[in-house]
Image (tube, rainbow, N blue to C red; front, side):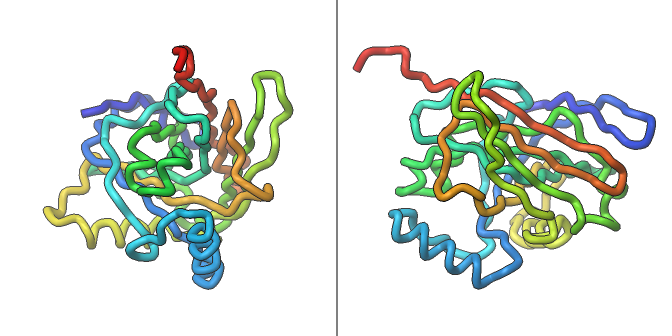
Length: 234
């Protein structure tokens, strides 16, 4: 079982919690515009990525495979991040973070689920109480930036309001309806992501994602460097 040390921030106060990750679930194909989702699935199919079994798609991820670190290790050269809101459920509270289910794009051509298991899920060290943003949820902004090299310029990679994808309430209801034993204490949910603003997927060396609350003028951020394990000769 993985334990995350997180800082819950709100107003002028903050507190540190130890959140035990008992289960983790990723979602995909979560756009509210269903025709756009269908078009995206067809585009990916032409690139060799198999279509999902259902829309939205949800699947389990190894629960120890989550990190707040500023570096991750990957084995493939074609990996990339994608911005997502993250929900953390326990018996008393729901917390909101921002993160990235970093993905091996070569493996994704064979199995979406397996492509998510070989790279970590990254999450922000700071989180909000869901109740603080519930009333203005659709007005939050998700965005990500990518750097190609250590000293390179950050490229705006994704940006859209949370209202363009599945809502937090709908995601939680969907997941709870699928859990066989009903256990959702210690559950971490990654929401699925936005379309990219570039012409193609970018395989950078740094990835940063943000959840922006314009109403309260605050930002959650998750940022990490990608280290490829290529230090051995073939």
